[in-house]
Amino acid sequence: MWLPSVSFVLLCMLQLATCTEDFYKLLGIDKQASERDIKRAYRTLSKKYHPDKNPSNETAKQKFVEVAEAYEALSDPESRKIYDQYGHEGLKQRSQGGGQHGHDPFDLFSRFFGGGGHFGHQPGQRRGPDMEVRVGVPLRDFYNGHQTEFQLEKQQICEECEGSGSADGQVDQCHSCGGHGIKIQKHMLAPGIFQQVQVTCDVCGGQGKTIKHKCPVCEGSRVVRKVSTFQLNIERGAPKGMRIKYENDADESPDYVAGDLLVTLSEKEASLEEDNEGRVDGTFFRRKGDDLFWKEVISLREAWMGGWTRNLTHLDGHIVALSRPRGAVIQPGLVERVQGEGMPKWHEDGDSVYHTTEFGDLLVEYTVILPDQMDSGMEKDFWALWEKWRKKSGVDLQKDSGRPEGPVKMPVKDEL
Ligand SMILES: *[C@@H]1O[C@H](CO)[C@@H](O)[C@H](O)[C@H]1NC(C)=O
Ligand SMILES: *[C@@H]1O[C@H](CO)[C@@H](O)[C@H](O)[C@H]1NC(C)=O
Ligand SMILES: [Zn+2]
Ligand SMILES: [Zn+2]
Image (cartoon, rainbow, N blue to C red; front, top):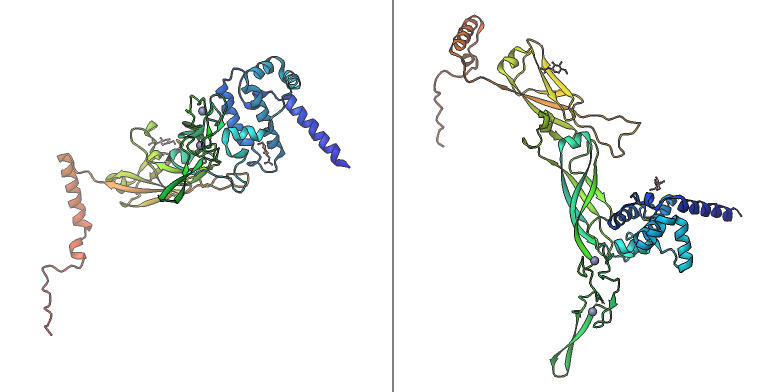
């Protein structure tokens, strides 16, 4: 009883939405957009809203249909002109007059991406190989998080011919193999004895189709190799070696559904020349899990006498002050743990209102360097100072070590 009224309301809403949403706005482009821009917008959005990627999401499904509709309207120069002048109403009248009607949005999708308009959930659907790439990311971006992009050359369905390989859209069945792509050859082994061999059709190359006027861009191969740009969102504290999946973004072909592109984040080693902008110490921190490591060099005087401050600049530019009051000794090799100055701890579900970002620790190892040269005056002063205090309270480390004074005669083993 209630069903018809609900679907009626839904229908109205759909109607309303398609009538009000501007096609250019829907595709995120402006009125001057080139044919290429329109295609690019369609490729991005149709993938985003595809029902296979948004299961049981009516909003997305509707968007998917609308995006296809907008593309159909704007990709044809004639209908685009009408749309620009008369809007949706103009197109409606045109389709009524010309007997044209809306196409199946899945058909359109498969012209761009192959694979029958779906993402290969169907059994028996061929799927292309996955692609693996590594992207080198500087430590700074792992620490702060970074919205960036990377480029990759891959095989794409030719935009010019939409994967048909034909300049005029006409594709004929191969006359040589009858569209099967294979032929049976008979070899005579001996008089009256034949062997049958299946071979790939040499006329169509196994496609089963021939093209009279080949697409000038792909030369009939239906695909091109092209550089694509991908958005990459590096989350704060993302672990090294993290894999990010771009569904169905591997090599495309009209013959199969594209596999996934798998991006592994690896840490790019910092270089003195390139990454030393602003001389940020953090650039050269070393990372292990959530902790960071750093070696700080201090002088003999600082190590022994204390009374110093060092300002380390961290990866986001804030200062981590290291210091000792006068009289505080630092032994060479000492490791100081500065709590909360390590990497942000990454969580699968991101930082939410329920947990604020926690940080690992920064481990500072002190290296003490001794001067190997002194002014002769200074050397005399130090020598005298040492002599004075040695006589008073010095210890003889050789004597105190308990070592024997001379060579030791080892007992000879008895022969058995
Ligand atoms: C449905 O899809 C739309 C458009 O992509 C999105 O904004 C919305 O969050 C989705 N809803 C659910 C429940 O996933
Ligand atoms: C370290 O930074 C603090 C401010 O954070 C500043 O007051 C101090 O002078 C700096 N010390 C050195 C040695 O640069
Ligand atoms: Zn053939
Ligand atoms: Zn082409």
